[in-house]
Amino acid sequence: MNVTSLYFNYYITQKNITSNSNERLLASGKTNIIVLDKTGTLTQDNHEVHGFQTTKKKQFSDSLDFDTIENSSILYNSVYKEFWKKYYTNPNDPFFNDYQDNLQFNIIYFLECLATCHSMSKIKGEFIGHSYDKKVFDKLDWKMESFSIKNNQQISEMKPKNCFKITENFNKTSTLLNKKRFKLSIVKTFEFNAKFLATSVIVKNHFDNSLTFNIKGAPEKIFKICNPNTLPENIYDKLLEYTQSGLRVFACAFKHLPLDTKYDDELNDIKYECDLKFLGFIIFRNKLKKDTKAIISKFNKSGIKLVISTGDNSFTTIGVATECELINKTDPIFICNIQILNKS
Image 1 (cartoon, rainbow, N blue to C red):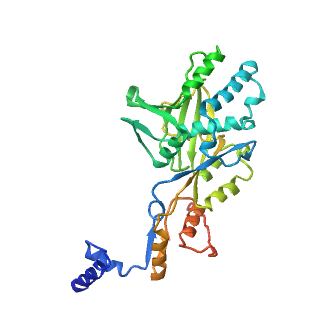
Image 2: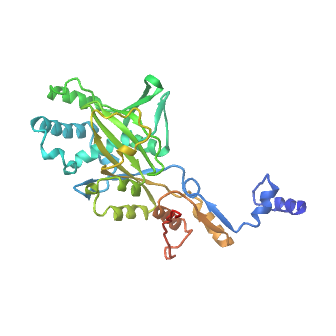
Image 3: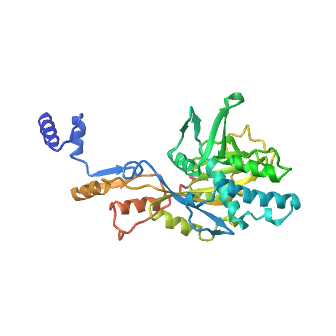
């Protein structure tokens, strides 16, 4: 064994490979299958924000890039002015019952969901949180401030960087909203929901004092807790289109809450997970590492079988496996659902 290890060590050293474990050297010679993670192993650690897609009247809008959204203050002013003008004239106007009639409203709710539905915090000027959330927040061009209140509960406030223009314009045109400041506060953050693979929060809008429940997570899970009337008919086809291209997709949804909602003692978000309004998709691209294809090719030639084990969407994984040539486009693929039956 020692002689074999010495020879093996010498051999791999000539290939610029080093090892500090003789046991692993011997085991590597017997390897015939390797199980790999996807993100950070085959693909890069960093995800790029590909874009987003929202809805109008149960139809998807064109896929949008954050750079195509008009200035936040212009967007908020145009929509909120229309809203308040109609609200104070006739609060029972059907306009308020069908939010999908207005694409700009959808975009506003969607942006607010993305700006608040995360577990990030700001400590000494630095953002702490998941890379996905930080990428999105950077794209939104919003500001976040975190501060502590009683019982050491942390409250985070979000607002567009030019939010002063929203407040300024409203103070000039509306006596009803005079001295109101536009900002969103995350007043309740729920623990990550493993069942729905989702993050959820309760948010207060200081402009109109409204409360909303926002959630972002795995599309297949979010669809189940949305009002079916808010889901586009081709929603599964659209999701398949993105995932088969190797893109990673999150779904966003929300609903308004009564102003007297008691949320302080809630330990989870189960009571809010129903009758949500679907807002749209946030889409990420996770590129392959530069040397992934070459390494996969060497493994294929060596006869070592490679397996991807990941918690990502099945079709996203298939798209990545095809792109790195771990499988061929013509290979038959079986997708199975495992159902655990209760023992009687």
